[in-house]
Image (cartoon, one colour):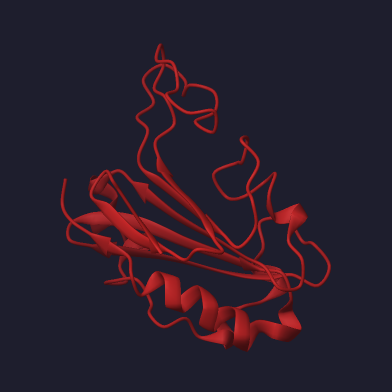
Length: 165
């Protein structure tokens, strides 16, 4: 396992997984990593983003996985943990307290995907934790194998720690 820590988020990434914690550059900034992507629009604030996958990720991956979810096999998992502005934590969308752990395999559905890809399923939950607002989005390569793949995602998510920034 390799421990990743940045922006108040820590996660243990298994040897066979790949992980990143980063922020997109703000307007006028240059990214520090090849995967940072294009800068945000002027006035837009960027927040931490975590990508975890059971397969190698290309440099350019959209916030919610475009560029990588198309590559998932039936054995693969892709996880996004996206932080939103802390002022959102008190809004109805983020009313749930804490990340769901372990993940319920029955929470996965093909209709929960940002873009339907045959055979795949996803789950998405918005929640607040320690004054922060977060979205957890998980895509699995096989709806039929959701019990096993949800367990694999849960094992990694069990290691996530968030500290106030």
